[in-house]
Image (tube, rainbow, N blue to C red; front, side, top):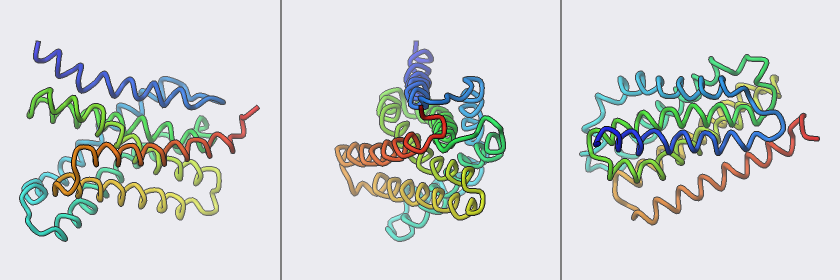
Length: 223
């Protein structure tokens, strides 16, 4: 029974979010097999992330120095996680013929981010119980999707504007890293309440929705 609860709490919400965001790709939806592939790649990305973050685990939870915690949150957590989530999209889908509009960068990146979040949530749920998993399923999962989608928007712009691709990818990754790092810093340091976390989640999601609307507006497949 416990195993079933863990799977339900960890996996099902992530899959629902994948379907929800996939439906936002209205004009030229990507093949479902590639979305599933991106989701799986995102889950696999947790392996190198875990190797890099593991030596800093104690410092991320026990350090009393706020500047050090902010640095670790941005550089160790934010940069590592957002880099690998974006990397699997870049190397797995960026050069595909199916990747042919800005929205594709958003959808592939969100799918990878949700795959990463599902595996991460599964690990947290196994260790801390399904009560923690429930909160992470509805907050942390959407937060990961938002960070990845923001970076994915700029990845899509880079594909459409090859002459400035490196600059655009850097801008998108930098935004995701900073937002992720600051979010983790505020949560780990207990500087915000649960309501504050929810408000941040909503703010990130609103920004992502804005980018999705912009991607829709410039879609070459828009009738």
